[in-house]
Length: 414
Ligand code: ADP
Image: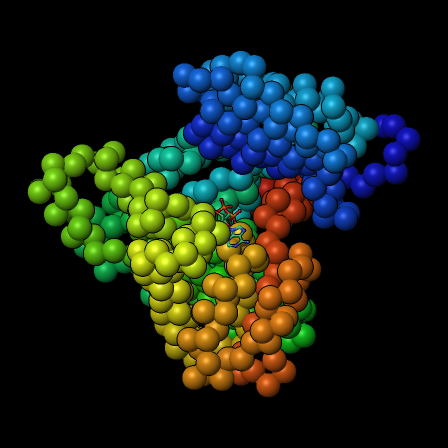
């Protein structure tokens, strides 16, 4: 180890089908020390590598990236060449984010051959995600065989949902045979926020009824009592629930039958239509809330409608979940839109004014990356804005796996 007085670090990796995001997390400060992105893997164009460290940004667009192995090898080379040196920064583990752990992984797991195979099998439930995530882990264990590696599942937190929330009113035999239930997603973020919010709100966690709005490009809402999940809006896949950047959210499934019968669409076309060409993107041509707000402010009626729908859906879930919990103490906004968009926060809270929710306009409009309360002291519900930190949450979980092993009997190097 070099002379730097560093705490231990964890490299957190988020592999997609054509991209890989990574961040080196300092476990003690919780900060991201370095981060990067590999884009356009397995595409017939040159890929893009972006590596950031120490205020420097290195961008390369000099090769076709054929697969994840090629991309990740180059990422490790960037750490050697541009820093930080992973040995010097005491890398204790690598964490892999996985969308779907199904009923197989209610808690995080060490990356082993057997667990990689199980993550691949679960791709049936998350075809766009689990495959590339398993490949990312497979490649990294080959490249860094001496470092413990762990899977952290987006679905684990919601494994504790009550049956009445997790079960669909679908034919029981079919649902059981094909593992169709509500798994939820963004669980790592909902759990993280659920733990931080009581402190920010200045209320004890015990008995606290809270709603977490994770609204970014993907968007989901959870209801939690004493930090335990009782509801969430994403279901079998991340498609269900709120209106999103490019996903429909809730829609009558008969729209699918209708499009098969009348538009002759096949499964892949429908998947793309509902997941990638709908939501804000499908309505306005822009998936980024900033652009949709700008269009609305310029008088675009479709953008105005899209934003009304977006807020309408969020408020509907808040009402539903407050009723399910029999009360509500804290609402927290997080993720890209939740953390940054004061107009959306104001619109949501305005609709809740008849229930005594009051926000301080100045606090809402003040830009800050600090966790904070934006409601007035006499508001019936404490409204918070808290930046999520999924990377830190993943890093903490895999650091623990590295030392203690997982709940399935695996230990690193055992
Ligand atoms: P992901 O779901 O991809 O992790 P993020 O949580 O990073 O997404 O959120 C990204 C989204 O946040 C962007 O697509 C954009 O819509 C939204 N966003 C970011 N900054 C702002 C802002 N200042 N105002 C409104 N929306 C914003």
